[in-house]
Image (tube, rainbow, N blue to C red; front, side, top):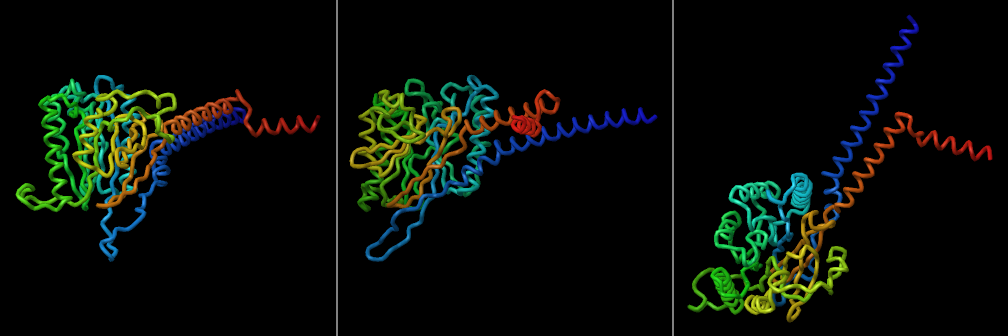
Length: 395
């Protein structure tokens, strides 16, 4: 009887050891998942803070504090469609963007968010049903409180390049996203341009886009010069502020050769010459925009990499990198503290994809070693250390 009891005791002990190993494995896997899929976004984005304006605004001899608008700028989310979108790729990259966006909203509390085009990856050819599915996923990922405004600029992947775009695709996009080209808040004017339509070949869509921009230019000039004549109409005048120009295609530049920073294009790609009307706007279209609108700041996307360029009389253009891991390892977005006369920009990085992958691979390796030690294929580090000490003592 004693022998039988002893046998049952050993069997129970083995079952206990296996159960304990399983609990340890589950605990490690759960902890790593929690860290990589939730906590890492808070740890990284908590380091971001709104940039401070260097100087307060002055009105004559008396200092007046203008209201500061907190604006967030991101670009090129490229939500995958039904044709090129593998389910695992969708799950991984869209979860990353959703967590990063929702964490940034909760921590930074922006008042307005601008997305600078290429919201979707296959809007240029997607069917009506595929488009509806993509829009539903976008609205879930980029959900936001009512007090936060979300403004979207159209990109070439949303409606196609010039030779692909059509009135149908543009109307489909504008039905979901407000088509307004001029947006003013807290004394700041934002002009949102359909840069795909600035081909300059006189097509109907291009002509309509240019006519809209000329009308906006007229309104801005009236506000700058404080004209209230019959030429400016009787409508509500715009704030007397040079606008912020938002578009998908960058203004013309030869290449990214002068771009620097860890999220700029790779060194081997910076010298590649850009193609007008494909990588950047044409010289003519760029000059027209600068002449018509006279912006104080330009923000654009499309290249998926960061860059800062000066145009004309010192007008700064910021190229905003892609927000998706699918396009770069180190996505980021721009934070802007703005008044009608001043602005300050800062960059906020979201977790690097390589950091998450290294964490998962390191954990997988650790679990393999733990299992091998448990089944006796490897000595535990403690036993190995003791054997090593004994060896040194006998020498």
